[in-house]
Image 1 (cartoon, rainbow, N blue to C red):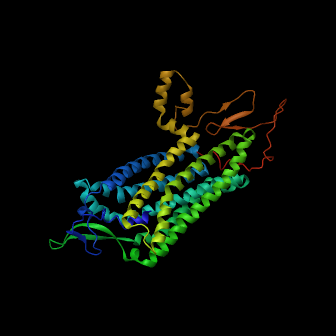
Image 2: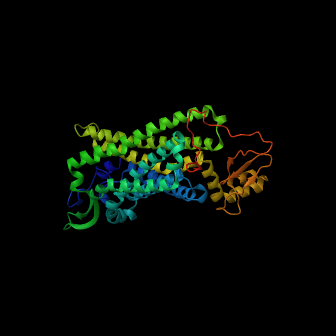
Image 3: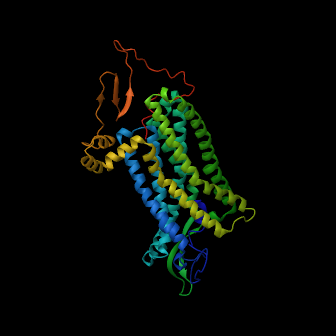
Length: 428
């Protein structure tokens, strides 16, 4: 949990600290005076930084692909917002936890972590909590969007629009900023002095403010409000709505032969949503457990502080893994996303492969090669009234013609509501 680490990021270890340097206000020791911790160097200095750098690159690619004209859809707008919050969280985590962990074994970075980063922490830490809260509620919004599209298809054409999705992202951004305003008042920068040399300033450190140490504030805002806003509401909503979506998907799969191609794509998007939500709940479950332990620790000590710090470090890593992994889910479950990614970033590789094997199918996966931003050409089929439009999506319009006995399959006989609106589909 991010709040748990605020109390420990001022000093990277509690053991073998020199008494020569300390904060004049709170007595915290300078990070430069802390003996290196191999555990924190590996977990936060190496693994966390690698995960975060890869996550920043992957989320940037996701935003670039999802913002293309042919990817314009309500769910994709929500996924752009999710990737934006994830990038903000990953960047803040590198500066607040990743670089200080590396500085333990790098003398050249000591000045960065003792003089520059402490001045950035009172801003980076609240931004990290804003990003975490925003990522949580965008995930909930994506679930609500899929629930409406799958279970209430008639309402989807009015609710699941690109314009409304942008409005939802704006409202979520306002909410998470307002909710996390107190975080900007939890830390302050204090000088580190050398108590043996006339108390000269040797660096700076980010210390908890008196507000952060206030017992009422800790119990009401940090523990109970965080527990309700970050766990009870999101987790409860995700469990209930995904259960309803899963029930409708199971019914639809039993009658898959009666579904149109567009309805089958909605089922595929619902499957991708299950993967996103499952990853989110697994990576945030440890943070949920930490919050429960903290609520119980307020009366009696169940786990020692050193043990809580280790658990909080690992929980922070899981949260960053969650923010870095959605790109992989898009590539696995999103056919349209995968095709566009191959066309934009792997075109030369596909051309070389086609030239070697003498095949044309590999290039057809990536779309046209003349212009990376162009829309695939329409292909007309003789002998049927099917037209392929909207970037390779097959919308078969059964038009009554002379001598034709085809008629659209009535979906009113199905017991599951599946979307027929063009505003909520054509997603990833």
